Image (cartoon, rainbow, N blue to C red):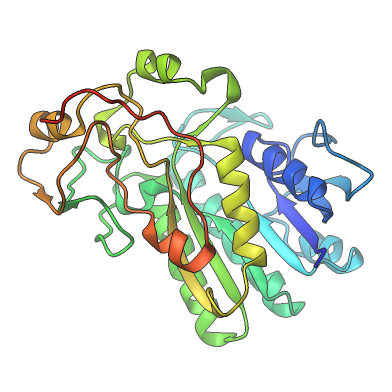
Length: 302
């Protein structure tokens, strides 16, 4: 069934990718973001369609009018302020307080507008950092591979805001039990120019992020499945999903990396080669999603 999808953050990397994929599947996309009017490049206009409005998602009145006027029946929320305080946007330097406040306000607004207008299908961008990773010093991992039951321990404003966005989704799902909300814990979404085993390996990576990544194509597929998968597999309510490739991006032994960086974390499996440190089986079971792009390393295990 073709949907009329409002995509926030439509001018950003991930928003453009999702908008293009949605149009190519025959959906109608109504993008919103702060910059002036981009379109999803390479979209197949013969299948779906795309329009764009320059809009601040913190303006709940403007957001509600736009969504209502365009008769949207699904919401994809990708707009976010990242962990980069002192970045100048619109002539203003964003502080840690701004990062937290803007992200939690935008998430609340898209959930509030969706509930008020009877939109039952919502996907919002969470992050692997919701549990406390890149912004933590140090992060604490109880066990590997990580799953969605792992405790939250965020420290940075961005990470904390993503946990709160998930808590807000829990609250809306309780109050509006016919809503189906997916919080996608995306990892680093890799641009095509970097999407090769050699390029990813040379990039190195931050141990706090457990060397995770995900392709643009796999990101878009997971997002759209969050809207369209039948209720028989993903019933109404709120669920969070790790969306990460099945291998870590170093061409090296994952077991050896655990030994080096996290020797005290419990291991719940034996690692072969560069198998990843995230368990995405929940996304497979509820959404029917598995990442299709990864770069296995066939060297010896440690």
